[in-house]
Image 1 (spheres, rainbow, N blue to C red):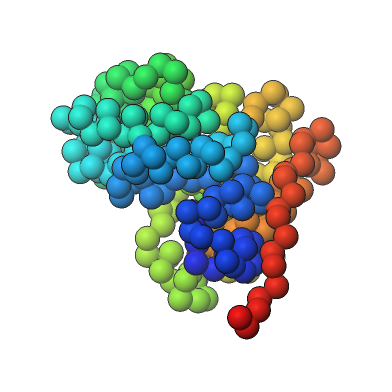
Image 2 (cartoon, rainbow, N blue to C red):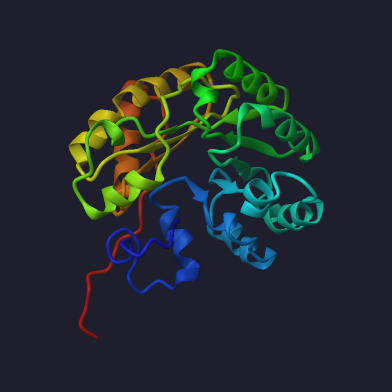
Amino acid sequence: MWNHKAWPGRFLPQSLPAAERLRAYAGWCNAVEGNTTFYATPARTTVETWAQQTGPDFRFIVKLPKLVTHERRFAAVETEMRTFLDAIEPLGDRAVLWTQLPGAFAPSDVDALIRFLRRLPANRRRAVEVRHPLFFTDTGATARLESALAAANAEWVPFDTTVFFQSPPTSEAEQDAWTKKPRLPRRTHALTDQPIIRYLGRDSVEETVNGWQPWAETVAGWLREGRSPTVFLHTPDNNDAPELARRFHDDVRALVPSLEALPEPEPIEPATLF
């Protein structure tokens, strides 16, 4: 996510090679979603550069390959998982294994998830994102998934799109997200000491900021309980995401003054003609 095309020259130095942009991104935020790992397992040498560009407290929430979660549904994936786990090993305990499941993955499929989670290395943090509506609306399905995740010390990752779907889309980016993003209730119950939130706002900064206020309160409560949450702020085009993430952090810090400040970004050089 640190190679977003709208960020160089604004949040990242314009002249910085793509292979070095994570270092600059880490000056804005202290965690990143590893979406590219969903499409292809990176080379271990590539992951080593990620580790070198970030500090010991930087978190990587790395999505498992879609072949594992979407195509084979955890069946006969031992070789692929060994390759994946070896590739991300340089990140050590800074990496969280993020299992994002398709909307077709239903409560009746939970046994397969349980078996898969049991086979993951015990020293690896894990998190699961489900999108089937019954996990959120059926109390029995909710309780069963919570029990399975708690037994595996896995977090349930909510993707909060409630604010986004409150009114019709007003731009091309919002229209695109309107057809792709799940419509699910907001969920604020943490299972582990490191909860993870994914929040989708609107093109409008005001609507996005107003919509995350309940999350600021929730996150502040988790911090007071001694938890260490990770929050990802999205908008339909993500052009302002780093700035919004810092603004959210400031809102939480106003509620919990002991929260450590985010790092200072490196200066962005002015554009030149030559």
